[in-house]
Length: 73
Length: 204
Image 1 (cartoon, rainbow over the protein chains, first blue to last red):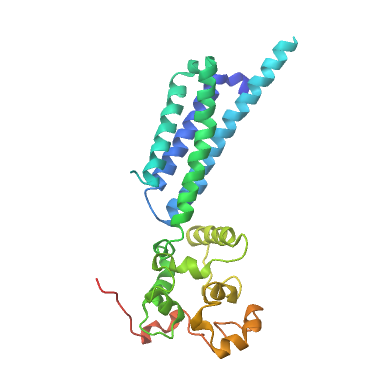
Image 2 (cartoon, each protein chain N blue to C red; image 1 turned 135 degrees about the vertical axis):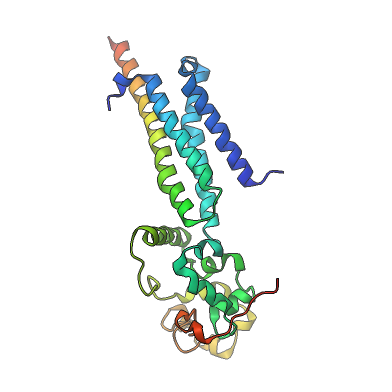
């Protein structure tokens, strides 16, 4: 995925939607005491949260690199 | 005062609101405060929610009802209500020698260092196998039942200080003689013989 081409606002949007979905799944899974809700929490919710957070952190690194590059020019 | 669950739901709600604010108005991140808000909303709060949620789920997974919610565990759950004191799990469960709401976990956890973590990983594997794999038939333990799990409670207890137990303590501690399979306390769940036993039902 070309993060630079996507732009910060789009990355934020994608990351935010993933996080909201992950949090919603985690909230729903917490309403039930069943092994499937546990799996849903760990596998689906956890994965969405992890991808969302990593995407956001990656975008921060990209921006920091872009700023360093433009300052050197 | 709201319980920990309510606070967790509140935290998830607040996190979703913060994220939604930034998603709807990305221009918020132009300011220093906005950047900090985005970092907290997109990184700190989700990690906190995930950690607290996982902790809550792990706590719940100790419950007897959680273990018995898989159909395959039904006979083992039933064995807790056998009306015969020779059945070790039943005697422990019915007389509350172990917490009745955490009966499976209390005996089948590993009381060594990282034991709780290891047993929960095994639990995740059980859930996976139950839904996506082929459960072993018949169900059996990964390794022979360790006397350490019995001695965790019984060692030092007055009722356990009989001549026989004291005499064989070293052997028991070294697992050279099993508490449950040596002809001493060898009636465990015995799920195969459930059609021949009576069942106890607790008073309503």
